[in-house]
Image (cartoon, rainbow, N blue to C red):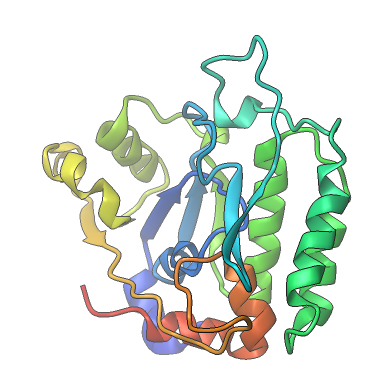
Length: 243
């Protein structure tokens, strides 16, 4: 649950990210700093990106979990349009892979089973799967933050202009930005023109107990939940530093 001391800083703050597959802990660090979180599903899909895959830990190092998508005759798709390819039986393969490497994790049950139940719904579209998983993980982490899809809003423009447009539509006073977007945001006046403060996310993934050897950062947050359980949200908060 969000502490009372955090609420004033979050009030009026918006964060925006593409809906990624089983995101890492830094994704949820953005949610902790925002009152509203926008899934940017109205931009072009990038194949073999975080939008369709993420990593877990194995005795042999990080392993990619990938959701196959239909691509033939579907170039330049928006994220919201991408369809999942269910012909390979990928769901049960992924369930077996996660179970094989995490069955001995202290909090495997119920977190893994809840994720498996969502995977087994056989969503037609990738964004729908990702967003349902993220919403579930948000709940497991007890993060209070309203979720919105950009495809339901009227934002316009590209890069900083699009982000600022979405923030303005939501009445944002501040935008919590990923560090990777700093260059193109700093080159733009889109936020200043709308009177919206830009705050850059400063999050460091701190070590926590893991299976399979020395600590490996930048894995799916599923690794954190299965290993740390109810202390996961506190661990993410500890990784946040002052802007």
